[in-house]
Amino acid sequence: MLCLLFAGWMTLCLVPAAGRAQEFKEHINKEYSLADPSKEVLAIYNLNGPIRVEGYSGNKVVVDIDKTIRSDEEDGLQLGKHEFQLGYDQHGDSIIIYIAEPFDTRPHEWRQDESYHHRDHNYDFNLSFVVKVPFGTNIHISTVNHGDIVVLDVKGDLSVHNVNGPITIRNAQGSTTAKTINGDLLVNYLTPPKGPSDYYTLNGRLEVTVPASFSAVCQFKSWNGSFYTDFENAQPLPAIVTKNEEHRASGGTVYKLNIAKRVQIGNGGNLFKFETMNGNIYIKKQS
Image (cartoon, rainbow, N blue to C red; front, side, top):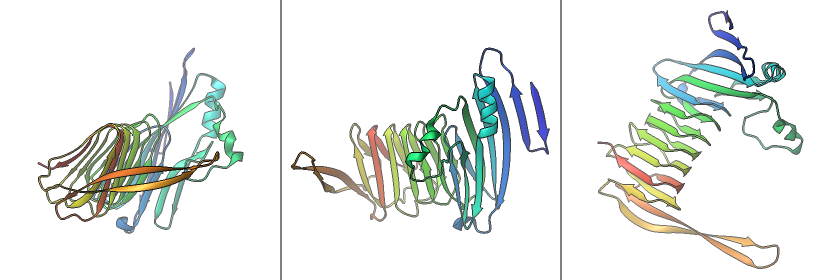
């Protein structure tokens, strides 16, 4: 194994392996100063690998990334080392970290001429993020494969998205949008959320724990699951029925009814949306 240490912050390791996958590893550290964390947003657009974000009392965003590139062939490994690039943007009130090459993971509308991005690159990659942010920072983070997302002790607004993995949020305080496809979604609030929030998992348990002083209107949908709460003051409200009109090419019109059930907790207030396909929904009171 050959390891080189650069300036105390970057470690490169090339691990040869006859007859099996070869790996190139790199540790990256970035720091960003924030003038007013409550007005700034950290965005991370990962694709393969976990993201962990922790709030702390400092005034800098500290990002540690463990990057791994793997290939069964030496040519593939060398291509990945040369081609794969991360992007780091800081402008206005935003810090944005994303994959820049061989494709751009920032949200955008894909064009037909971008189809080459889906070619076989003959290598795999994984990015593992561990990030410290000032308590009040707003975050917008996402990943797709091979990674959990964990957010701890962040007071700002949260936008958290996963596809093939769970989401865990603890000691939150801000408005929250949290969505995953395959995995549990667990959220715990230190104080009642400051604004409307939206929670979704296609296949998994959806559990939100809030202080006893929580007061809101909760709207929920589940195809193969039930809604549970231990708030004694929960009162059912009339369901909301939405009719969507769909015109068929062969002629005729089809109407689809979308029914969302609602419950008021306490005196009502902000709207909190909960949705699953296969899983139960729990709104729990902190003990």
